[in-house]
Length: 171
Ligand code: FES
Ligand code: FES
Image 1: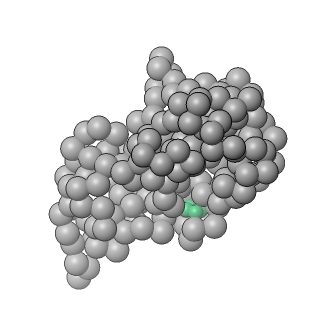
Image 2 (image 1 turned 120 degrees about the horizontal axis):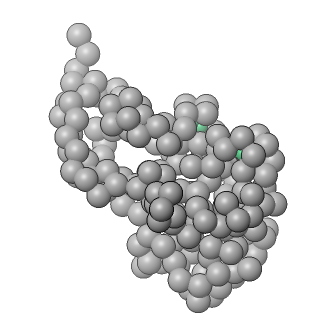
């Protein structure tokens, strides 16, 4: 019989307790146990970025991480960034710039972009101000490089970069 473990996570601001097979990925914990299906399963082995979520403010591929490694962590998924009435600035920018076609990669792209901007401004936990992002000199090439873990089969890349630049105050 598989080994199970009980873990506590803070997911999108809510304390959650889960008893799981210890082999469960963070992605499956979110999608199948918490019914947060915004995070997508593209490849399930770290090559597409569709599963990108923020853990303690840093972007990770949720398919590559076991849920049991995240005891006590704060996890933010696309559902926690914003909702239709209160879009996160990055979500609003993706809408405005048509940063998607089929949309399958989009939750991962948006979580990754938010994490990427935070990385470029160390010490800023979750989102970034225009001044800090501009100071980090994120040009198109640098944005594409830093977003290269997020594949878009529809090749919406120019629009994705335009959206990120707007949301980061770089446009
Ligand atoms: Fe995780 Fe592709 S599903 S990287
Ligand atoms: Fe279709 Fe990116 S919008 S995969």
